[in-house]
Length: 174
Image (tube, rainbow, N blue to C red; front, top):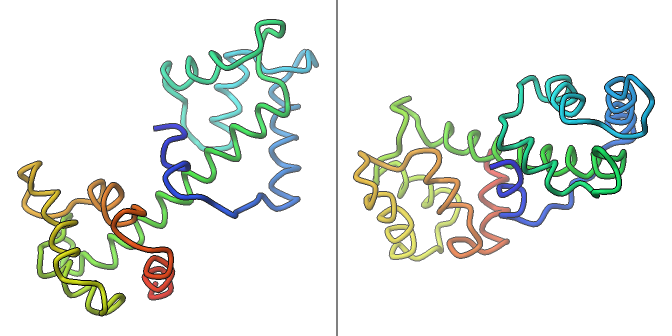
């Protein structure tokens, strides 16, 4: 889950210079011995500082497996790349949650077929109803009462379900 969401849609987002400086400052603060890299423990502290949670062992193992064996940790450029990808994934999830919340007008935690159809009639009136039904019906495979946020992430925003133009029209409604 660490990077996969950011890859789901291509992004044009770039960190602002102030964000970039903050990431570099966090790297330097966590590199207490001025080794030029972050160890496993240093990386965990950096993630807590930037994202407010302690990364799981699996996340840390995933990151550390990509480290050059000649170094004992994550170099600054690698760290900046990791943080950028994590921020992209975070921004993507925030978009999905925002859309889901806008559709879930009765705060049930799921979307009914009627909620789903109504939303698409408003933002993509030319999208064939068959497409809307196909996207919604995928969630019924999981035997849930309706479309939950994770299903919306997997099916609604995918390039297979929506063209870029429809996605942009969809996003402009919020």
